[in-house]
Length: 372
Image (tube, rainbow, N blue to C red; front, side, top):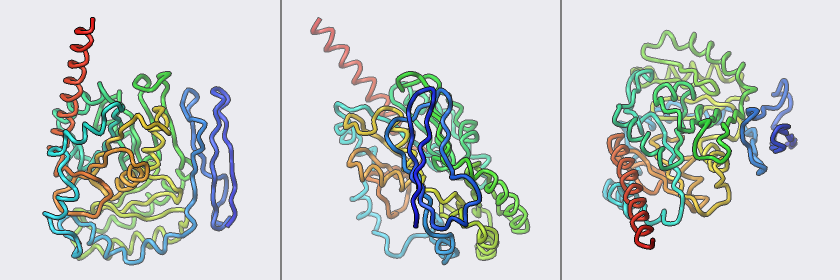
């Protein structure tokens, strides 16, 4: 394996970004190395951001695909899962442990990161109808008044924004491969953040999308969603007896695209570029853009329900800093520390967070008036 490094300079800001790209086979790559884009008024700190092409093909990932599809079904439980009581003991409710979580935030800036589907909105059969309630939107809006807040989703960034409709948030779509921040907000300089580390893959993604759509149109209930920098093959509405057929069709299309990899979500197959960039990388990028890259004065709170959110939970574990909250009613293997059962509990948690902040500010003002 050979390594190549590339430095991309922002002539306006004078900041540079280094990319280390590991290629497993130069013949697999027809043109330029995928590179992040930065908007003219965007932000990228001097810290190096490593984006690596994975050295393995997609063959290993699609072996046993049918078993993986079955295992990911929310209606099934892994046979070696802990029983409910034991699991709850190790992953207590974030609502019941709210005061403990707030104690961990003393002297720190809380930053909130939220998945969308299954976290802010219920899981529905039609992904185009995964609407959040107005009450949930108000709760997220209130959170953003006091804390830097981001939506980190596998969905296309534009689609997530159209669901949420709050311009004051940061949005990381396509599993973090498309990140944009508010023009005005918490970050110093009020500059928009824009990171697209997989832009060179767009023609390939579009090509595979068309091929997959044609392949699966004969399987009732199958749906291919184009999330711009990745694809989602939904099988929630497909009869289980036809999952094997769907898996075969997906494999038949992507077997010739070694630059793409297959991963698993909740009744969805995700097809993404083989760069080392996921929700965990998006979390780190957003913390860096907020000025908290190496800071101990921040408490990231990440709430998500999907396998892909585990990448973010693992980052928090590695940093030994932050709160990971898994949204799930059933025991699952997770790197999160706490749990919430459903979007309704997520909303309750967000509301309590706002109330806690208001009380803290009120107490601070009272103490300052007493000193005066």
